[in-house]
Length: 443
Image (cartoon, rainbow, N blue to C red):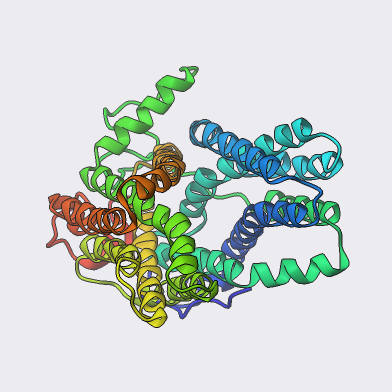
């Protein structure tokens, strides 16, 4: 587990002074639950991969299970966004964790016996994972005061990166003593931690929102009508997102980078490592360097407050373009690893201010829906990029495709930065005092 990031000197209203965010018991409970859910989410495909190695599952079966999980994830994200805005975010986290927790032993029971049963359980597990995302995002805004949310979001992403870094070694060690079924049950226990440990947040009251919308009042000045349909409620979230041009521009840039840059990492990097370097060391080194860079980026952004946070964040997002660019020409492996480290730093320089800005700017009663739109588009289009990049490489060659991916990674954030409100990820004038922006003075 990571230690708390260095405390920021920013003091939000009700923050209780300068102290590390992990000393706040309410946030510590939330962070522990989110860390458990992140570890469980990461562990499932890895453990199922171990089942392929011991021939309990076939490669085709693994692909089917991962596809079922993805379908469940994408189907649940918008539903959870609506439910988390209609009802208690804490209850959405509870039921999402319980669903994924219940699916884990069903996966274990079907192992080696029934692939359809496992596929159904994988879909339920994916739905639980998807439902957690917008609920945790909105719950963070309820638990943490505005002045410390950037520090809180940095602590959240540190947990994810440390899990990614040490998780494979830990899982491999446990596999020496436990079989795959037992590991799947262990994933279920992690989901129970994610379900029960977080506490209840303080739901926002009806106050003037940062975006001009009240805490429980939408952009039009009226509360969402009770008993409206799911599509109508989700549509309200889409309209709330459209009220923030910086969000629409940033989401478009993020989606483009994930669909191209991440696809290059997932497909082209293994091919280049094998064909150009003749070793898996480049693949392992680049992915490790990326995670290490992300850790460094999270530590940096826990303290750093740039004058133009939106443009600094978009510049960080654009840095992902160095990853596919490093694969175009035969360079020393250290260059590839350095490029991936820079990409890792950049992605967290984007992620943390992005989440913090959404928690600050979006109407509190629609935050979960807007967050679900974020996850739905950025993660939802990633499989499309993965599916298309391999045929594109076969048709046009690796170099042209990688150059196109790098260009997209550079150009999309640059285009988003041209939107005036992208400078600070805020509708407020750039000249507004930084303290007012940090504390969300109008909210």
